[in-house]
Image (cartoon, rainbow, N blue to C red; front, top):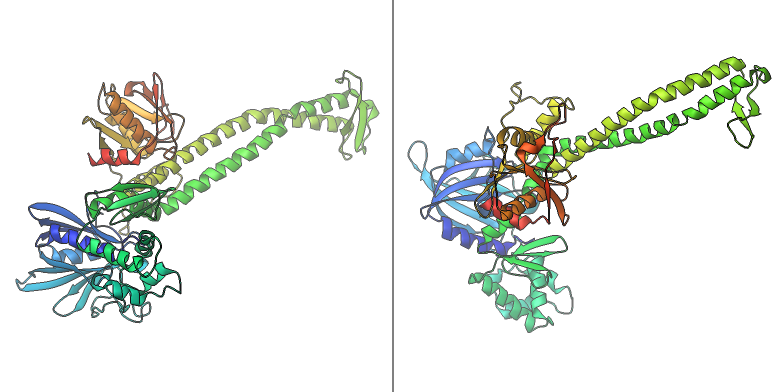
Length: 570
């Protein structure tokens, strides 16, 4: 729990410096649990992100771009009605809890002064954003509705009085002395970090473990001194926002945490750090929610075709026994005089055997010797003819497996807008039925929106993150002499450098993007081919996104998320 009460205090201080006294110009709700307020303060437009996401709840300034829905949700429209154009007079933390109240003042539709409170509760899956009429102390609406059936202490519903969450009766760490800490801790009971969390408001296990770590040999002298010292450091704003990475896991906090071994990356502000930490994480979660059915369908189709190939290969093995059937038919024909109806088997001289051995031929006792021979010849002909058909079916199934494998990679690196395009592609391919809006109108296909990156030397690099985007980028948008890139024999994105003669640095940066937006994202020394667009061709009747190319050169790169973020920020 990195976003604890202490972190909330520091974030409130950061937001106060940037936003206090600003005007709320725009309100957007790009996703179910997130609201973006555009606030004009200190002569600058800034985006404030309020998130009640069950896993990624937070409050921060953001530079990330968010795509808004064509029709704003009801909560968004209500916020626009009540706070758009209003002034953010103040913001503060409740006690040392993970709660922030924004005090907002403006004039309502009839010109009277109106006071509102926008209350953010950061409580994991119970996180919420609540708009309250301050004068009447009544809830106008919330991003999540909670009835008394769910919470007996309070209901978060329009028209209900706003009641604060139950008090935890813990000490506020910003007002305690070393003696106070000493009185609260029982050194004989052990589990000192848990005791710190239990007794001091806003203290997370992450912070408590750092206190124990920095105390060295934690005793009655070192632990209280370390605890009060770290809290004082936060109170005075002596921060170094940092992300700690180790073993594929990441954590963030107000300063580097010594008990978390690994790489440390520091940032200028808390908001900048959170943008970096949540880069891709929250978006991936939203993609999972929106595209879960698509991902499940793609996996099922891929597995279905893999099983089909397995069965067809078994059929092929049987078909390859055709020569044995022909041999039975010929040997039986040569020995018709020795066979009689009713026999289950006949042993004859095998003149195909150089040693002159015998062979047992199974017979159908209900058929005459001649009919048995004819049956073997018929089965031989059928098996022989089926080989070509089975080979063709295996080839088709393998192409389907490659296609769905490619789609699966695209879902993994997709943004929410990309999911809709993948869905449209499956509809156009006849794999799934087309969705309709509630008003009965079909969803209209729009021109793909591509992701742009800017290389270090200022060259535009475009990435297609699904087949519709790839087809549009390579076959329609890119000029013939611009540079096209793709991971070698690995499912991934089409990448185009908008330059006829890019620098070596730009080629390597574009290759890094190609490797990052591919199935080899977590690999090293990924081979990436590049060539001019004129050498890239789409075969007639090929699946979406499929191309062939020649005259290529290959570079090897290791995907670097920091570089991708830097190029996107440019």
